[in-house]
Length: 81
Image (cartoon, rainbow, N blue to C red):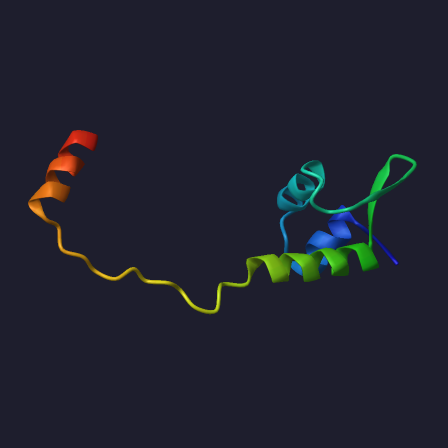
């Protein structure tokens, strides 16, 4: 099945501008039929799967241990800033 930009935007609740931006940036695969830009169902579903995988948050956030700011560190920081 093939979607037009308008069909896919309406179905998925995505703005046409956003969809066109993804296409222009070569993030979303398309095919041309004459002058029409079409998106294959399998290409869109595959793209969604990849995108969900990329956007998953890490399982655990690493929080650095607190440290004491000594006068030596404070002097170095003043030189940097």
